[in-house]
Image 1 (tube, one colour):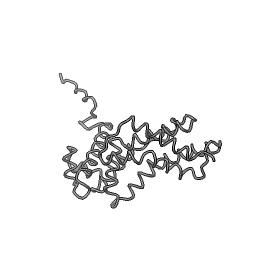
Image 2: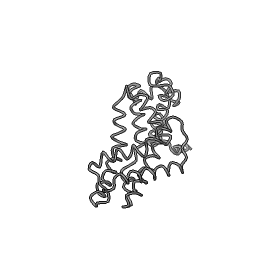
Image 3: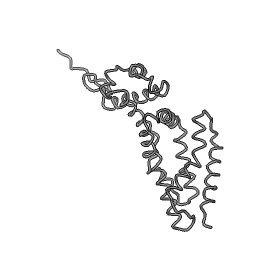
Image 4: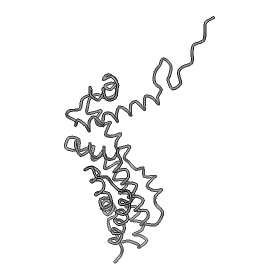
Length: 218
């Protein structure tokens, strides 16, 4: 009697092909490996051969997805940007109605992503290749920073309308606020500084109070 065929192994599709989830995970792993190689060797010295070896996959597999090194670089940086962005819905959930507490919460969330390992890697690669790919820095700003600025501007405009602060250009003021609370720690991490969480929290509170003191009606 002929035995029935054995069921496919769990997590694999028929004929040993990877499942959609496995293929997506492998594609993300490739982009993460590529970013590390670009960071370690620089764009000029990074090669598809080196990336393939690091990722443990054949060059033809990479070329089946990306036409050349630039296409792979752009995709790797875009993935890094996607992981760095704080969704606007998460920002809105931080709005307590109290301006000081809301600004502290937003600044803390934004700084956390900026100084995270993913955030540091993104800033390093953007800084290193800005002369070659300035559009990627613009993309990072438009997708990651500008939505935060606009949300802060909305919050400031609402409180200005209520008379608790006096601002004439909420978006410009929002940009200045982010620079005030994030710039120092974010740059320090790029230089190798180790941040103390309590000191960072104290700094954010100080910056927020300084900012609000400058914005109060006179």
